[in-house]
Length: 365
Image 1 (cartoon, rainbow, N blue to C red):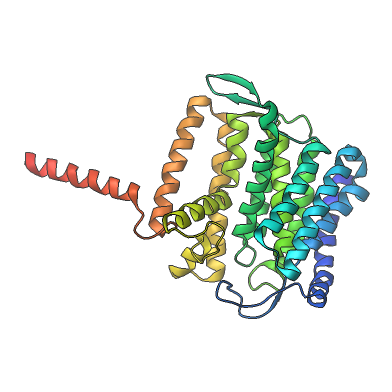
Image 2 (cartoon, rainbow, N blue to C red; image 1 turned 90 degrees about the horizontal axis):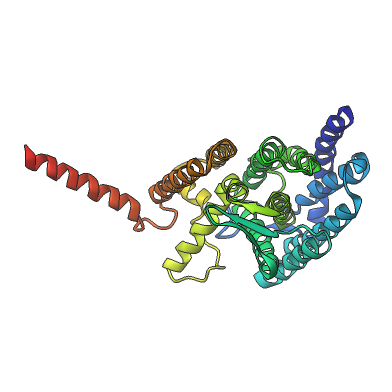
């Protein structure tokens, strides 16, 4: 146990020491983020910060803690990580087109499925029983990996935002997996803790005012690893095992889903970027850069606390909790105008109910 704690602490130090080196490397190879209409940075910033996280994470797993993991699976997973990392580095330097990034991520996901053998195989539906996914196993696994990876990538819009959210989500995942979900592979929680440590070492450089960005190198790598970690609990998927990671990732998933809805309603290409994401809307409401990040951290913590209620609830309690969470989320989204100022169906419904109730009460008097 001492060796594990020492290795986790060493991961933080390794990550922190590597960041200045990666920062200089980013400038040399041209992995920089220049100011433009969509960016919040006012000066050219080095990206590719995820390289420091990747090196620290894998150094600890393969050198300091190598005896803790099944090495065949780790090597396969490492190959997939490298594919994602290379895709991110190329994008940070040359800016890939969306379909080019998709090819890289899909290739990595196929390695996870066929070589590492990490996949969804069955699905237990409440009141219906267990269903073997069969041929659907591959597309469902790929969709999960690509969706989560891109959700983390999209939320990376402010200093320290994606890094902090990932720390909160991964820590919650480690706790729920180890203490509540009875995941037989306890080494998964150790891997998650190692990645959290690497992110903690990086965060001081990335928090506002940042001196380096994650870049796609980091956001794609982090999102990819989060999706893969979740798959260990989703191998034999149940309502609870599916809903918990979805709730834990509530912030990036919400931002992604409502971005798709917003662009569809406005008849704009789904892949076309805009400045109406969650962090943009909060800043447009008057919050500072740092305040916006802290508020979103707070929202991520709320989602994490909600996720911890699922393992101790029965199926009916879980369904009610999900409905209440969705209703609360919709009201919040409409209040801040995440979809658009004119799109407020639930608030308008509540308003009509209140007005009718008031009219009925006045009529009786």
